[in-house]
Length: 569
Image (cartoon, rainbow, N blue to C red; front, side, top):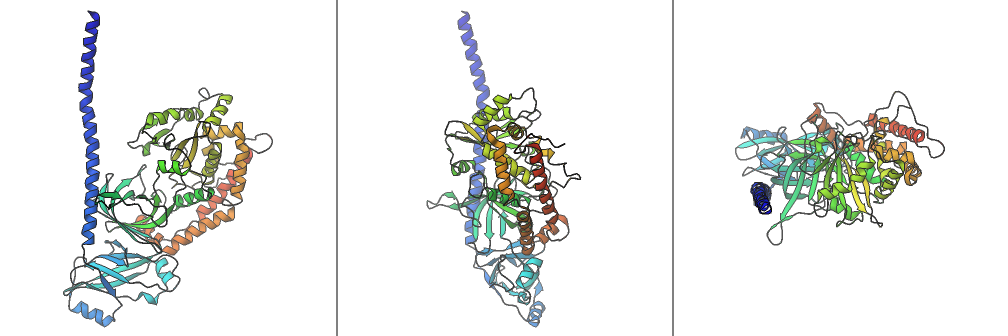
């Protein structure tokens, strides 16, 4: 009797649970389907906009400069237009950027023109009966001066009864334009993207765009974006449009990084370039290419951005020789970067970081976090919770790719990555030939690199990062797997090459000259900081040279290659 009663109670409980869970499952399914439907609708609209664009009339050519008397005659017989007569301008197949606030178009020429002007054949789309001529003759100036100083040249657009003046500025950086319906939000919105750069075929594609990143409150209202190119496939259905952008590997998804934390706009770019050069033979995960560009969104100038490859963990695993059927990826992030991805939150513990799930072949975040337990155990700061030395050493040998760790920690110190201590670190777990899931480190989001100022005392060195990163410090203290000798081998090789004082000076100077020659920083600084100035990286280069010397002092004092350790106080 009791057994029968228990069975009935169990069945009732199961029925109640099903009744409770089913509506929740339906809500989640509907939410997922709604998001999918919204994306499909956005893609359809983007492709529709692309077809609408193709149906526009052919642009009219811009004619050579007129005599001033002829310009005056046009003014005398027409009224000045209240609105814009020109909607779009092109140089060949390249769409010019447009800033409606200043009524100025931007044409990229690159930085290899020299003083002589290349052929500049512009065309325009606008009002019916549009004609357009140069009102200024740019050929009186040196081309390099016009680009570097951002000279604005005027054109006159006119119809039978109206006229209007518009400006053209020439830039040395590539130009990206985004035109979307409405505002760009965290959700995909349909639009059109164009990319123009000297020496590359122009790109003009249907696009989905959404805001990305945003973490901390930015000092300026400058946001990052993610682009996803689309096209109509051979079957007449939507397909992602995979293409090379500015010589980078073909892809359909791209990032436009604002680097708004950095008023130089170039820290992240320089750090990535050093990471790539650090591993010039490709023996590292996430060697990401990028280019600096000028961005225009819905006919508003947005400034200098970093157009960059998007992290695609599965492709990174394949490129590095891993197995996408077994290997996994995660990221250490701060609270500001938490999104809708699963997170193992260890903030507030002695470990004090958050592990974000990024890739597992079956989408199993629990497996990723289970594999990360050893990494967490190795990162304990509380001595009472730490593994003993023997267990620590054995776990490191079975879980941590020592070479990857030594490369990462030296790169971290060399570039003073203060925002990459418990944040912006990718961890890839790749199975080795012995069946161990080995952890490999890679950086991300380095827009606050090179911000360590020279201390007042020579031995007041880089105590701030290495004390907080328990795993590499303890590895070096115990010299696990000969990591101290490996560290010195790597450091000496880098200090003799890409981290040599003269190499650092040349890198920073070359970037400064490149940006200033493009004229772009004059516009960036005026847009976001209220005053047009040239980029000056001399102070940052000086700090970086000091920083490298301080790193070396710390390494010599804490982990000497020979003799007893002498901890710098």
